[in-house]
Length: 373
Image (cartoon, rainbow, N blue to C red; front, top):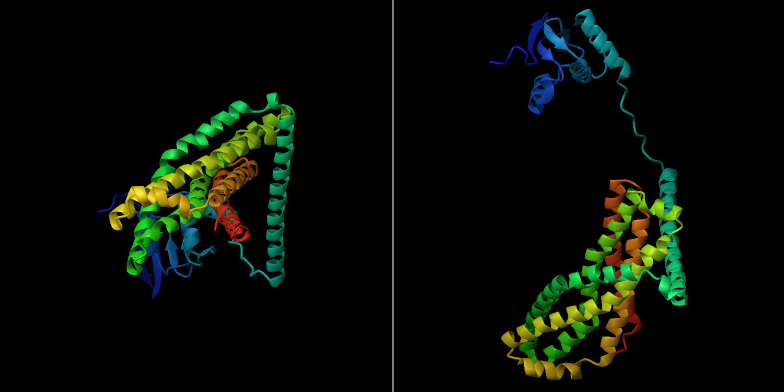
């Protein structure tokens, strides 16, 4: 048995035409439960302004209930409507301030063309800003070389710790597991041809030259690149960047330079650490799956992998670190003072950093394909 205040209706038939009689309180307080509105709309489905409506027995009718009825009538008053003067005033006010939903015209080919041009211009502007940031970083490096005592050394040491030292556990774990997986998959194929000893060559070149630096860069891009963007973006949201500009403090010198230097220094070290962890995993898996002893593995590794591979991997890691820092700072400085832009900028920073790392690694692989072989 419904409560007397519960909004409900009775459906009657008069002269072959449906007639709806409202009962209860059609107010916002009664529509707090979603299922109640859904039940009313389901019961009134298909009954519109062509039916007869009697609102006189409704205890109360406010603007929320009137809006529900007005939507049910599809924004036109029924021809057979019985109601009280106070109810008519509420319905007239709802009808006055309820506009028709805008009709979206189908975009023309010209609008598509202009939209494409606008998107291209936005991308070109972003690329120009990134190039400008890179040039400013080079100028700041020259300024630091001329006046080392003015450098942000305390910021550099802090970033080295947060970017480098705190990343060692996760990079070691992931590198070790990648080495184990790669060794098991490789061993399964080499066993078929009796070439067990060549697993040292495959793991050495693959991990030292390619997978170690790129894996470390991807992990740092997702971990530290997003952190850089979020830190600078929060400074934009809290107006700290504007305060720095008012005080005459350069954003690029105090924010971009120490982060770029920290990543350029930490990235090769993290890459070597990740490579060692991956080689340890490959060594363990080779011993278990193929019986390659650790002594043989360590003796054969220097002969299988030339020093040029290690030099190339270190050089790539420095470039990866600089690019990750520049991309993170670029998106951080481009954040608008709202939380939605901060989230979008952080996501775009991670995706762009990882994409740039993979593209640059491919360029290095093509340009230096004769090095180390």
